Image (cartoon, rainbow, N blue to C red; front, side):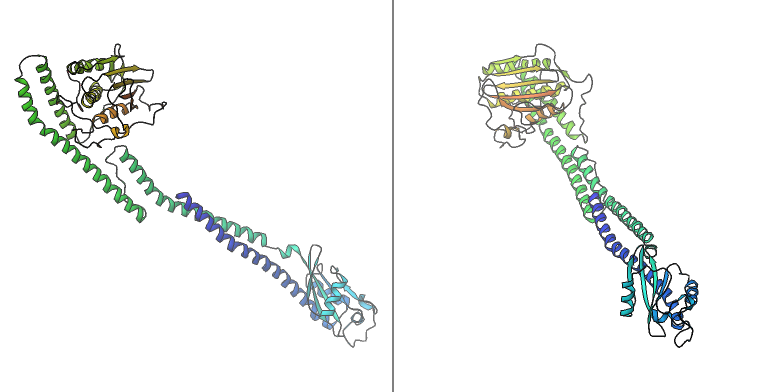
Amino acid sequence: MRWALVKVSLAVTAMVVVAFAVPLGLVIREMARDRAFSNAEREAAAVAPALSITTDREQLERVVASAGSDAGMAVHIPATGAGSRNGAGSGAPAGSGGGEADGATDIGRQRATDEDIAAVREMGRASTTEVDGGSTLLQPVALSTGEIAVVEVYVPESAVTNGVNTAWAVLAAVGAALIVGSVAVADRLGVRMVQPAQRLVEGAHELGEGKLGARVPVEGPYELRLAAVAFNSMADQVVQLLANERELAADLSHRLRTPLTVLRLNAASLGDGPAAEQTRTAVEQLEREVDTIIRTARDAKPQTAAAGPGAGCDAAEVVRERMGFWSALAEDEGRKWRVAGADRPVRIPVARTDLAASLDALLGNVFRHTAEGTAFAVDLHNGEDAVIVLVSDAGAGITDPDAAMARGRGSGTDGSTGLGLDIVRRMAESTGGDVRIGSSVLGGTEVRIWIQLDGQAAPARRGHRGSVRRRRQLRQPRQGATINRSRSLP
């Protein structure tokens, strides 16, 4: 916008300057020419009174010299007028004073042609003609004898263009100054318009990056002030909505404490045995997770774990631990399971609890959405710059992976909250990785978690349609334990 205003101002000012400067320059040139020929006419008029009195050569030479133009003036007297020394009726003998009784008398240097001089005598009015180095003014003067003498005044080219170049230079300087001044003013006006727009863009970027305190000063043109007011109002509304969402999550989580207390009491009365101990452990873990949700939701500034040097966990150890829990449930339902790649340490820049929650969410989906006896597998691949975790099953598969990755699109009839795959996605994207849903070699669904080791964006891979940012709606596990947001269960 700023440069557009500068260009428009430059074009408009340049056109105005040209429209005025060019005609004014031509007028100045014509004025200089008129001034030069007006001076020539005055010089010719100074000689005319002397010609009306006498045609004596010596007297006329003194008159021409007194006019100060003897080098540029010539007087052409016809033959009949040259024989009279003191005018008409004079009895002076012909031929004295430099004139001849039978020929014309010429005083000064003749530059015009004889034809031009004869034409002026015949027409009886002044005329100009071009000669070498300039022009001449031919002024006819009537003698006392009735003959016509011609006064020739030479006007050099330098006299015609005297002061024109200087005037043109001044006009050019004034025009350039006007153009520069208009561009400077347009630039300042453009800055006043562009800066509020830039601040609005910066505020939008900051708000998009999660800086909820980003606001825009209300300044600039009227439309931009309205935009700033609308932006600030929108930001305030976003902050309020997020605060309400946190409060709602905390309140809903707090309501779970009463049924959890009853569940814990019932689990304590189950007696001894592996199933009873496993149930009590799951209830305790669920209570801890509910408390964590309440504390996190109440926090006005959610904290994000930084994956710096030394941070993270051993992915192989977490996989072995979680499979130790889910394998017991798999044996109860007659499911075949397999773990690969977890026999050696694999360090990843992810918190232990986050990876455990992601595995629990994916394995819980397997138990929730596939029939009993359906096999599943967990594979861990360690590369140079990334670690891939594959969770696959032999179920019926997912007909619409895009809809499964879309958070909150579940109908709610199956008890899904739509948070499971979102937990996995945020865990992967925190390292620069992503999540994909495809078909597994077992014939069902395969969820691939790409965990970037260097914290940079994951490289493009064949068949990959970009970072999957849509989330799948998950259901509760059969045993009633919440695993969408569960941490590592013992």
